[in-house]
Image (tube, rainbow, N blue to C red):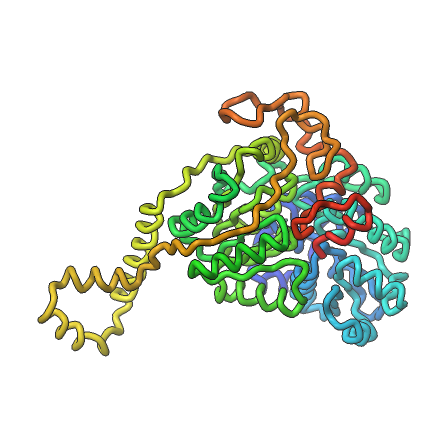
Length: 514
Ligand SMILES: Nc1ncnc2c1ncn2[C@@H]1O[C@H](COP(=O)(O)OP(=O)(O)OP(=O)(O)O)[C@@H](O)[C@H]1O
Ligand SMILES: [Mg+2]
């Protein structure tokens, strides 16, 4: 690892990085900062949670001329929450230099953003739709942009966003430097990327698997109707500090978060149909630990950096392997460990294989815990909590009462009663969820014409069986991803409220996470 002080970074930025608690550069930072400063175009690919934001943030800040009022750097991100997060991180890096950063995103009053834009931010971070809106209104002028960044670049160049990105790019000078970052970069998307870059440096941090090593990855087989009970049992056994449960559709997210609340968990949902105020308040509460479980669509899959997320549950298996990589990457960040559990119905086993082939990582099968095991998990938690209270002392106000009780009852009975009282006994309140339409069967491995993801040719020659053991041969290494350019299909239904997907481009565009 290289210390930031050994990289060609100015002192004011060194100071900011030290204040952020960063001492050593992560590999992607080490690999891209120098190229970034030299003005080169870069495609930067490194695993989730490994500091890509700072990797592009440093060269941006380094090159800002604070005496120039023009927008000099533009960062585009796929979701509102990510745009806000990235703007905050860039602001911290540029703190000593006093660079002005502004986030513009949908769902926030446009007048307020227009006033803020008049204040001459030098760096603008935004979501595509809102950026376009400002460009059309001429409230955002991009002639002075020297650096353009696409965070989550493969997502931004996917069908749902590509038109918007093209339009935004045409407002930015050709002489600009273009930086693309993501943890995933499927081949066809990289080809699109290279068409608008100038001899890009491709910095790919090599790793055995596409997912981070310190995430323990499991899958659990369950029928659609059993999934919710299995989820709650796993929650009771694994006892996450903070967990994200990903569902396929908005309706799913609403139903699962509601059902979790009925069963006594503190859970809230987040998806694209909520007001921005609600989205932000849910996320804030989750970060503060006031909500233990965030139930989300893929709107929360990419880029969000929430410290303390110990577990990710894919209640519905994601439609494409890239989505899997990003979802599970919400845990195990910056060297921390994490656990990911993916639910798979028997019909969807083919998808599990595709995910494993792409990530080059096998998931460990997890046997659904029994209700007894779930109870034991909760009892263990109560014992821990009670022990902690005893260890902390501070029980003076209660010792008198305790002594009186001990005269009347057996000590073991009293402790047992306290434990019983503290144990959240698994609830069996009946829950009924609408059945989610399963992903199209991957039985034959061929074809690939219909709706849904995986239209590509990946692994089709292998004729992977859709059921049966996990010991079969893998379709060899090869490129890590090779879906066809028609990947827009994989976005369909992502946020589609469970309705069948419309085929038009417009329909798929309306479903992008922003
Ligand atoms: N050099 C560093 N030393 C220590 N921590 C760092 C360093 N750089 C970044 N971090 C921290 O690592 C975490 C992950 O960083 P970041 O969000 O940039 O990851 P990412 O690679 O963009 O992940 P994703 O692919 O999920 O978007 C953040 O909390 C960030 O503050
Ligand atoms: Mg990121």
